[in-house]
Every structure is written in structure tokens, then in C-alpha cells.
Length: 142
Image (cartoon, rainbow, N blue to C red; front, top):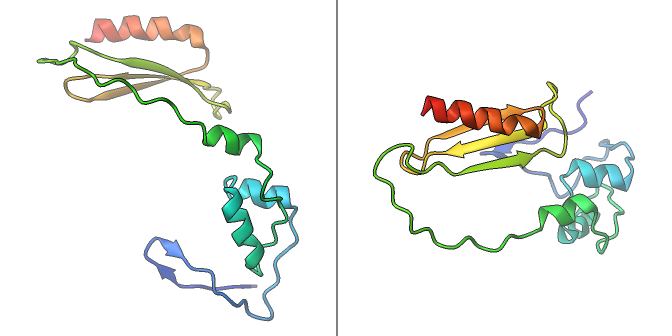
């Protein structure tokens, strides 16, 4: 049974200010709303209180671990003075760790970027110890 229908405005779906009288939303715990909405900022939680269809009693001053991690800022990188004139002269690399293992068990990502062409290679890794082998294979490829 359709509970609510709204028109799309481009890439956005608007929520009407007044909900139809027959529209009922299942009661979900505040923690569930909070996590389903992508750990919104305290200001967003305050706005959620105003919407009749969404009940979110998460305290505006509570900041969960995921929200705090998402707001961490890094210091800016120093300006690069490197200059390359051909592919594979400079290939910066980075290893990323996923907080959750993928379906196939991949938990790490090796990213290599060619400074000249800006072409990017990404290797999925199950173990961090695989990084060396992939770099050796990449150098042979280059």
C-alpha cells in the first residue's frame, strides 16, 4: 500500500511540510534513524524534530564515533614542486584500509597515480602484506 508519494525535483525528492492524515511511519529507534541518515550533524537532528514523518530523539549534542571520524580534517599538503615530462617518472602511491571488509574479503586498497598522465590504478587487497608484490608487478608493467 502506498503511504506517501512525492514528485522528484531533479535529483531531489521533496518532503511535504504537512503529511497526509493517513500516512503513518513505523516507529524506529533514534539510533536507527541516526545511522540510516548517514550520521547527520547536530543541526540536521534538530531539523528532523520538526518533520512530522521522522521521529528522531537523538540528542543534538551527542556525537557518535562515525560522525566524529567523518569530521576529522587533515592539514593541507605542501605545494608540490615536482615536474614530470613523461609517464611513470613519478608514481605516488597510497594504501587505504576499509573499515568493513568487502563481500570478497578485500580490506585494503593500493592506489597508484601517474603524476604525468594522472592515470590511476587501484588494487584490492585482502592482506596488507600483498602491497609489495603488487608494486613489484606494477614496476615490471611500467
